[in-house]
Image (cartoon, rainbow, N blue to C red):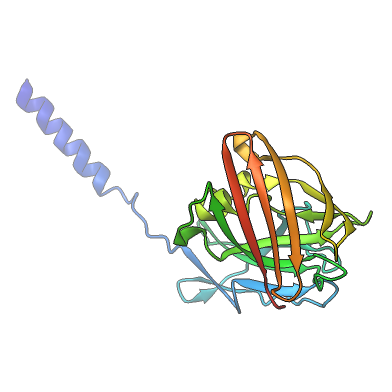
Length: 236
């Protein structure tokens, strides 16, 4: 009986393996035209460079979607400062898809005399400790709202979002700043929380230095950490 069953199983397996169920699919590949990060000033025109999408060597059609990281836009509006992420997608004939992402920073570019808006890299010290991974991290945005206040995209200088590579869910925001006097570094700043972690934050010592092209501040988080942040303005 054992021999008969084994023979039947072997016959069945052999039939399945030669039953024409195997096939080859060529996954789509996408390559950006131009840079993966583009910085433009608010109000400047933007033409999407697009992508090259292929199934093997055959061109296929790609589509794109847009999300504004901070202000929630679903289209790229160059009149609204934000970090826009364009996701390009393409599918092969078997329905398998591929994606690639481009970031477009639309920047409200101030002069640090009359406006603290701009695009910045962040160097962030936590409880007195600074290592290379928390240096010159890209990017913090500051923009001016319609009511005249400013907003900072991360009140702890990208420590977790970029330095630890945890992503946007760990940004500390919203940070709303009322500039009572920029030349005198007199600001009123809202409290805010650290994304997924939670916990309240208080920012102080906000200082704009037009000569050095920096914005500095210190944030105390209720979890027991103090972040000293130096933002260096990026020239657009």
